[in-house]
Length: 197
Image 1: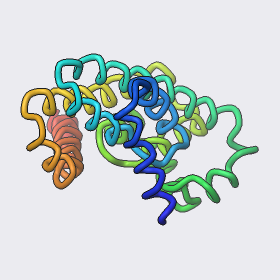
Image 2: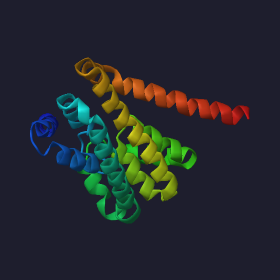
Image 3: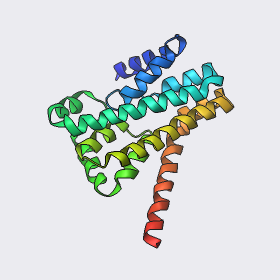
Image 4: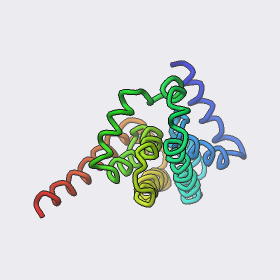
């Protein structure tokens, strides 16, 4: 997996160039459908480098990721039969077993699975493409993507703008766990309400 580390370092290197924001947009777009490195890596570096621009960085990251999610949906909807073996062989996070498991979850939890994957460190590209394969309701997919991706990137950026370097350690060590716990509690709350009401 040395190539993943080299790719990670390459992504991080863009933070020190004048093309950092453009790289953030491209990375955020690509990660939603095929790229293995999450945009948070570059988002954190950019926010720490210029905390006054956190809102701009969060907006660029969110919009590009949402558009990339729509492309992922389109891949699943229109091209999956031609591309499935490529994704299984070359895209980290994709496997026939994971893909089949996600397909089963969509039948009952389509909005929530998209939202949770958009907000947490789950492999979002698997979710976007599977959503297209399953042809789930596109407006619902779009809303879940907008809410989940925006909440994630604006939260990360706002925390970095407010607290700076100490938050980097928290994000590196605990942020993924906290987002998963929050998403589980949120979905669990709605499930309980559904059964109670």
